[in-house]
Amino acid sequence: MATPVVRVGVAAVIHDPKTNKLIFGTRKASHGNGTIQFPGGHLEVGESWFACAERETLEETGLLVRAKKLLATTNDVFDEEKKHYITLFILCERTDDQEPAVLEPEKCAGWFWKSWSDVKALISGDTSGSGSGQQGEQKFFLPILNLLRDHPDIESLM
Image (cartoon, rainbow, N blue to C red; front, side):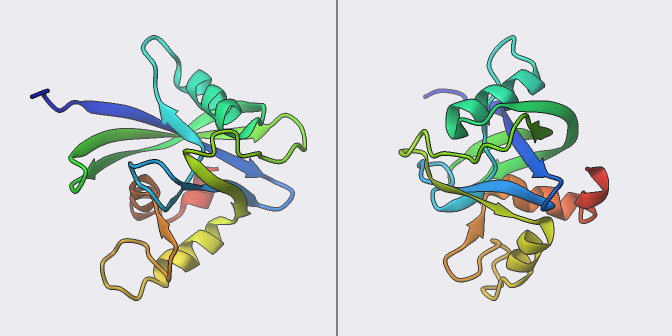
């Protein structure tokens, strides 16, 4: 049996200053299936955080972005899946006005724009009492929940 390891995940926080919205997608992968996420993935050996955010965004959405700064980190333990990640949230800007496309349909159901206030309203609308960020059928990937728990003033970091 393999020894569990802590992995590094990188989330690309792509902000449109014109609309004050961010790109989110709905996961279809087995890990976090059905949850709302940012574009992102695993940090590769020898890769910089910024390069990872730019690469993952291009692979998943077709968008060319420029990574600007590390916003925050979270410690994410997925008890049910027995996985543990350190997630780096990297603020990115688009280099043009292109819209995201679903380039990995086996991993993402679609991309959409939401503001932080939209996200916070959906999470606070959780009526299940589970803390899972659920409202109806929408729920958020654990790193996003942890990010907002640790940084309720997330807008000030941007």
